[in-house]
Amino acid sequence: MPACYSKFLIRGLAASVLALAAGAASAADKVLTVYTYESFVSEWGPGPKVKEAFEKTCGCTVDFVGVADGVALLTRLKLEGETTKADVVLGLDTNLVAEAKATGLFEAHGIDASAVKVPGGYSDDTFIPYDYGHFAVIYDTETIKTPPKSLKELVEGDPSQKIAIQDPRTSTPGLGLLLWMRAVYGDEAPAAWAKLKDRVLTVTPGWSEAYGLFTKGEAPMVFSYTTSPAYHMVAENTERYQAASFSEGHYIQIEVAGLTKNAPQKDLAKDFLAFMISPAFQDTIPTNNWMMPAAATSEPLPEAFGKLVAPEKTFLMSPEEVAANRKAWIDEWLKAMTLN
Image (cartoon, rainbow, N blue to C red; front, side, top):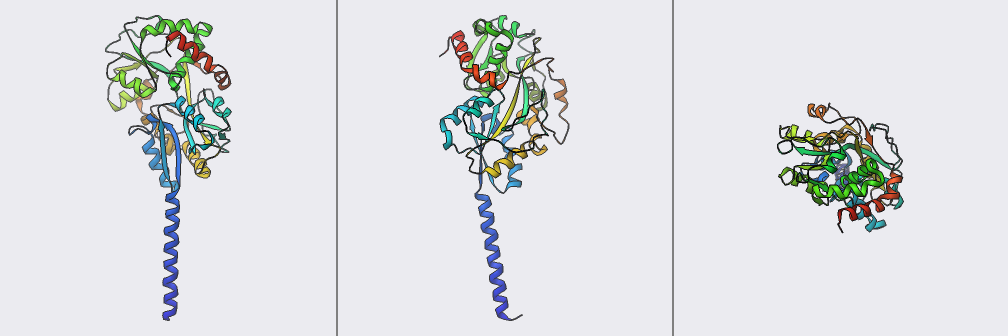
């Protein structure tokens, strides 16, 4: 081969290598910012596995930004407004979607979400479910031999047997309990809260703090999910912690994620939302987020999930009803609980 052709070939190869390197650097420079709650991104939560799995397919870096809980997530978005750096917001629930849409910060995702299967069904052009769970009172069987069998028994039970709950102003479980009380008691909810407050050890900003107090033995009961005992059965090989089955039924939480209108990485964000309802993401939900998957997993759920409380009745208010009444109901709660 003539020397001149060799030079052109070497230069061409060098240019190709530089182009590939530049392309790789460009891909690596793409950062998908996902706002979510702290327990999702903890070392034992789904976040690390989700990050690893998605980064293998996206040629990008996933940056999870954690806040205390789901309601705090919406509050942060409202404060940031159109300057938010979030591409995806993951961790709101159906109780908050009407209020979230009203901010004008989200847009339709345009993704086929037919793979989603949740109790009662859920379809929305802006938010996609990624898991669900029924709220429940979790109790320590070594401390409480006769758990409450209804919300009424919880409200009117022994004040010496304390429960840790979450603040509805900052926490989606806290809001869930507020709505559950309202669904069962109606306008008598403030009076029920006034009775229940004698059993409340503390009100925490988020779920993690309350559950931590419970597992440390500070309180024999905590407000959580029917799925919480599965964690202890699978990870700790113990059935010590159980969910109380309530005769009135249980309030359900369906957690969702959405695309922000001004997402810096809009295409990546849509790819992530589609990935979210694939088995690669859903496989992380049962034994990392300890909730029920909202779409198909690649393997059957662990045996422990077959031992959980299965509510006979499910409560779920419409997002519009929650948005219209949330502030007033929280004000009632604050007054009844004498908090400020």
